[in-house]
Length: 179
Image (cartoon, rainbow, N blue to C red; front, top):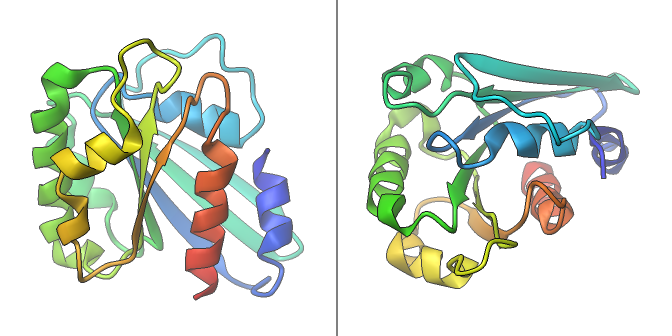
């Protein structure tokens, strides 16, 4: 499913421009997810040194998806992109159990920022196609997502490479935006 089909679902607000921030640690699959959303080829993906942005205009509606690199040197600059964010999508590599605490710490820090205070959160538990990957429910438990009482959130298992689970996550984003 590409961005154009998502835009068709959001026709009720055709004049609205949306800003979606796509964050997560390096190698979590953010750029692959972005390419999947844009219906682009996902076989050649290189690490993001800065940021990627995909914008689509349809029927007067503009959706901007910002994919910011997740290397430790780049993360302090994430805050420069928080302004006017409508939805935060956080991508986690479900197969990288060694970095679960690190990604949880980064997510917690993001959620404490005032600029992201009421922004809906979608967590993509990516790489579900990898043997031994943690299930989305296990990641939600480890990250204590159920304790997030002050924001709308959802966790969705997916494989950005295969495209599975991506549509379901983006359907949730569309419903959250409509609210």
